[in-house]
Image (cartoon, rainbow, N blue to C red; front, side, top):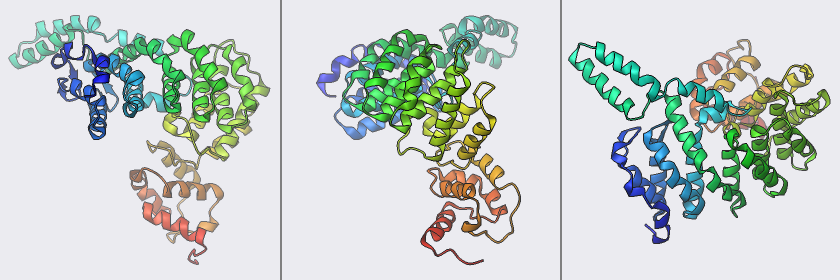
Length: 421
């Protein structure tokens, strides 16, 4: 390991990692992976990063080793090797909130509700129940199993995922004061990462909100500025609407989208005076973004701009022009190229192709603009499994049902060699 980073890992070997757990059992290998992040071997660093994602954050789950690793990861994010800092910030974000939260939540995370639910399943609450079960058990095998679980809970653990995730979230929360320096980092990607992370900590908004608004006001990179602006709208109180409204007149469309999305969240807060005219402006801005998407997008909603717009519009309070909202939603419907779960894709196919078509494949030119857009996005989709999961429905519609066939179908029309019917 490069000696200059040794100080970042002070205390790493003092932790009883073998007594902690991750997705595959004992966490004895975690310190080696953390240390490799600071090494000079770039391939080893990448392998270590992947290993940490797969162990202390496995498919959204967090473990006892997850929270303990956070302070060391935070030091690397701030002062570690340039090649490790951005990936480490991404890991810290995942350890705080998993991708399901990030994808589905467009109005800010409900930490109070999360804490209330986790409190009901914490070790203090569960231990008496396991003691009762152990006392009542008569089968030797079952007693041994219950005793192991009881001892594990008595050591301060809980089998409930909400509780274990909250421990990791709180560990990241404790590191935020030190991570704030990244808002002034020379690397725009790190400024973006910390702005995005702060969006998930409303309890820290007293410290973060002024810094986020300052970053949005002075940032040159539009993705960073939009990320900070929307983060401010997600953690700020109702009065934040006054700070965000002027950005509806920003030059860059991504900034205007972020302002509109933030204002929709703020419009749902009690006491926020966002009148019909202002809400109308936000809807028009989201409609424009849906029709003319950006080359670069933020990480919100896992980069799914159109999915984010849909969720934001569905969260609107009653009152806005329903026709304008419907128009914006219609513009989002066929745009599924970033859909990574498949829900929006299946919905789009059902709504845009509601009836069976003749067995003979239709001509691309005879499809509606929305139908063409959907097939264009499917042909270019980054997840080939999505097309495979929809293959039967596409086949029933007389449409190409593999990605290769879809690409050929679309390309034939663009080159003017579409076969006659």
